[in-house]
Length: 40
Figure 1 (cartoon, rainbow, N blue to C red):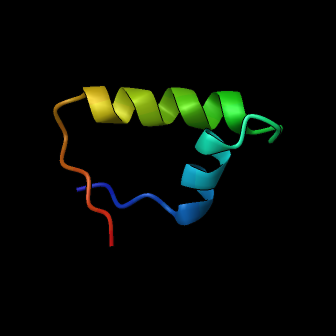
Figure 2 (cartoon, one colour):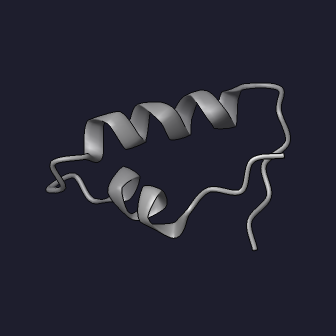
């Protein structure tokens, strides 16, 4: 199970972040994959 850090979710959402593209790509791949994701 993957439990992402909230910072990664913020970066994936905030298009002004310098980390946005990488975080968004990671998040989309994670959500479209077959693994289990936990959100506390």
